[in-house]
Length: 564
Image (cartoon, rainbow, N blue to C red):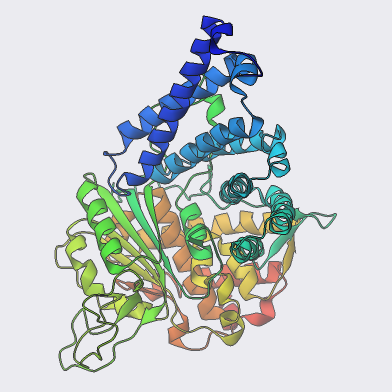
């Protein structure tokens, strides 16, 4: 209320407008704060609460648009407050994406975050002597950058990072704060994340081309007519990142970031699917496009097991659970006569929040097993349903010692455990094995030491790879000796592409001159018939043709050419 005005001087209608606005604002904050108390796992419990929160925010957003003038004069509504509402709606859409894995909601989050910047909602914040408001602005930038990274808007990310850097500098100069180091770390992390791809695609004018590696129409080899494969569908995926010293941003390691995109279709813009201005979350796209995902950054064993159990419990009939582990290897300390599923080590789980009975202090008996480790045996209970496991670790070979106890489809794809030094030196920018599963051409170019590829050549090579992948698909389905588990997963497009890329990766590394020992090749459980797949003369011929196309044929053994 302004100046000498009393409440009685304000028309009743305008007073009601302010009261209604205050009610909606309080209600929205209350619901938003309640979101963090919802369980992170399980598909059902959170949906009605999210729906109510969306509903109140939609009303609040429309209400402030319709009554902006009254709220300006009678309530003193500031532009940063409008920005704060828009930012919360952006966060809601982003979290809805995390809960549902529907990439279309990322576009909705982007449109709200983008509007905040275009309309300069936070512009006045820097003129107010309130550091907590500036922090809101900085957090908005960090969230906007995450969404842009997930949408591959790399040019915009670079602009936002520059703006955020200037904002942080201004903030730390004006207020003598203790969080300066934290914000500088955010900048360093996102800068390293943007530079993580080892190979760039260049236009003729040498500007960088942004390529997408999500599933696109026509990118998966079709099944041959009459080919009988399983009808299983990938419904749930756990993506776990616990690698020391790997590039990360906002609880996403670069490996997690790549794998989550390998399990998503290219997003569509929901504005074209709905006539309303904002999309209610119950207006889901017509069919479930992507498998649901849980992203777990450095989980403890308890957290990992809880999420695994929740996924397992809610897995629909005829569906597959995928577990992707990108983690530091844990090796067995002692040697036992009986070698069971807990005798080969596994991959690291986080100890920070999971110390049991002071276990870290006491010296363990040699016969005891590592506690903070996901052993192959820990996954055995979950093989009662179709399970597809990918392990990218220095001890991935521990998972070769699997046993299929329940006769359900089960496949494990395992990374090399040892890399040549030149590849090992790049490991901070993400694992080569995961890169092959995410973008085979990026990984192939990287392992050949290329830093950049011209756009025309890149597109020709991608087109050639589509032909190679069709042939690999036929090798898998026509093999007389292949384990049926591979074929049971082959009906699902995501799993089909992962299996084909795995075979390509194995074939390429076997021919590469730097990869000299068997530990440097990927493995699988069950084993693939090598002659039919990874050591097939046709695949070797294709790999050498691709190497010639990229002018790196000298890096590969070409004995097989003598047969042609």
